[in-house]
Length: 200
Image (tube, rainbow, N blue to C red; front, side, top):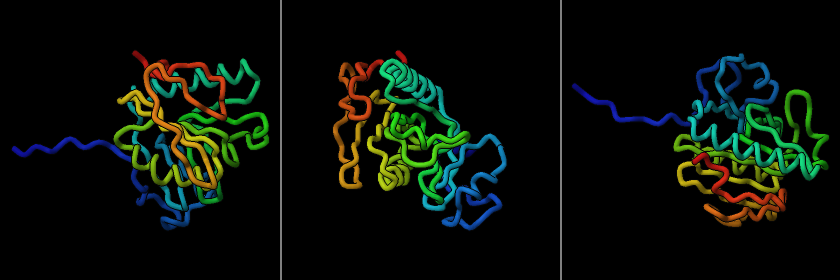
């Protein structure tokens, strides 16, 4: 009897779907995709599909969104959204960040069924199967589009890495955990300890 090693689902190119060749997908092609329950994103014209999130991912996304939404409502500084909600960063880049913040000055980017342009803050909650995609393709796309702040959240390590855009490249501010409060420029008075983003 042979045993098959455990394999973690990961973000992979969606090579077998009808449509343009990889590298040539556009927002129009993306909008024509069937609603088959799979999460697709396009980065640099390549169509990717993501695995279904696990419960730690979803619980962490929920906590982050809740804190950010409440902060933005209380301060009147902007609005938060969570996936699935399309963000068209360029004609050949359409992503669905786990959580995103648009300050009031960016509200004109909000359309009925998507955001067109860069949110001010993007949050991605990583898993072993998505961390590479979040740190390569998506991080590069966010920087090119001008997303001012990017948080990479690890629900297993219970950490939040904060990156800020400087001269079109992300500069690491630090990796935070426990009782730390994030030094965010987009949500500067978010008085929440990092540990509060993770379900006990």
